[in-house]
Length: 180
Image 1 (cartoon, one colour):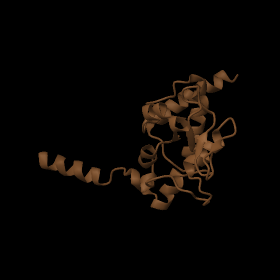
Image 2: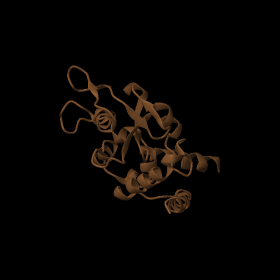
Image 3: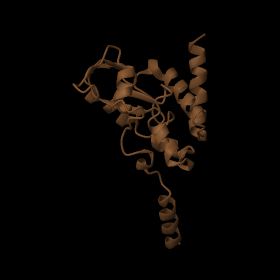
C-alpha cells in the first residue's frame, strides 16, 4: 500500500506545474528594448514614465495598485501580476498548451486584463490562488477583479473548478445588485 501511494505521488508530481515552461523571464516581443514588464509599467502609469538613458527601463512614474488602493512611485516596488496566475492557468488547462502558447500567455500584451502592475507584497499574498481563496484588500476593486478574471479565463479557454465557479457566481450577483 505504501509503495502504491509513493508511486502515485511521484507519478502525479512528474506532471506537476513547472514555472519555467512559461518562460524564464520577460520577453521583448517587439524588439524595442522594453520587455513585457517595462511595457506594462509604461501602459499603466497614471503619469508619464521616466526611462533610463537607453530608454529601455522604467525608473519613474506613478501607479495605482488596484489590489491595495495605494499609489506607488517606485517601479521596483511593483510586480507585474498575471491576473490569473501561471500555476492556476496550468491547473485550468494550460498544462496541455505548447511551450509557445505558455510563453504567449506569460507575456500577453494584447489583453490589458492579463497582466497588471501591483505592489510586490499584494502579488505575493495572492500567490497562485483563485478568487475563491484570495481577493484584493481593496473591496472597491472586487467587481472589476472578478470581471477581469472571467475575461482572461474565457479568452484563454481555461476551466474553472466548482469552488471557483460558485464563488464567482455569488460575486457576480453581488456586483449586479450594487449596480442597480
